[in-house]
Length: 134
Image (cartoon, rainbow, N blue to C red; front, side, top):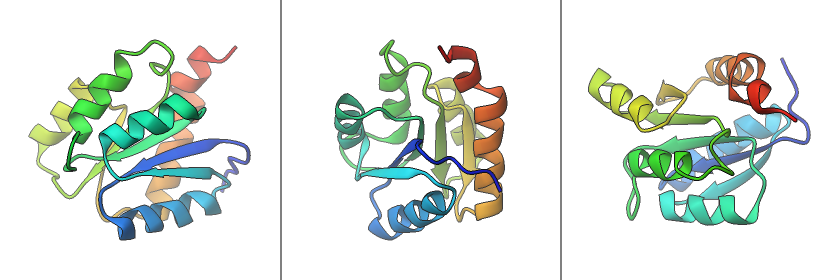
């Protein structure tokens, strides 16, 4: 399994138990993990921290995952950060909307560590991060 020591992940989900599960899974992969309860809080975390990858739920109060993705993609300093949207809403219309609004990938909940690891590896090896590295 790859190690992402020194990388920071932002986890945005309104359920504390889901944030904890993801935080523990990402920490096992070597990530430092920041947490936010909704999209607006996620924006605040991005403004104060350097983040390498974002994991966002869709259905949240104040700012949902769709609006969050759109807001991140509008800011040039965050445009390169990969966004993985997670949800129990597995209907293809939600997947399509998430990708249309700027997500790089969609994972249905519950999330298996092995799948999480594969998605991260693909995004870091072949995605935005490699293209925009200095």
